[in-house]
Image 1 (spheres, rainbow, N blue to C red):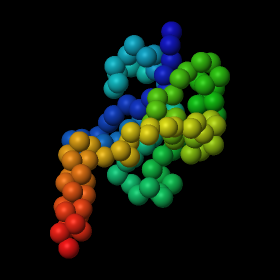
Image 2: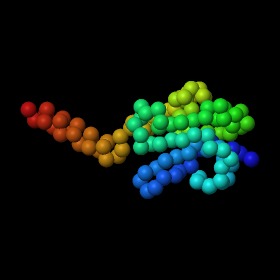
Image 3: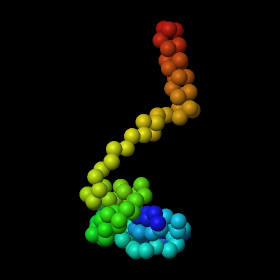
Image 4: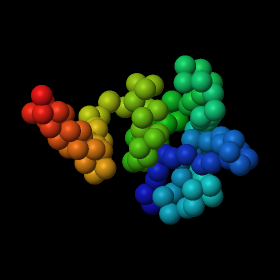
Length: 118
């Protein structure tokens, strides 16, 4: 059985509240889980200590038994110092899109034309 430590959504429409749970990866996102390990409230300020609450001992227990955290949960665990920080590299994230590149080329052409016209 492959285990995941992931978020289960709760709360009403446009007012999300998440539970950090250990569950079988085949179960639905908000479905059956084995244990609730903490909470996450994205509506609170980022520096609020109530934004993310975790039972670190139980999370370490599940990690030692082979549970894999999802991307978002792994970031919470890195911030808490439970798991080592992983290096993420997405070089295309800062690259402009097609339209922005086209605008930059047009702007460069206009600037060049203005310099040669003088």
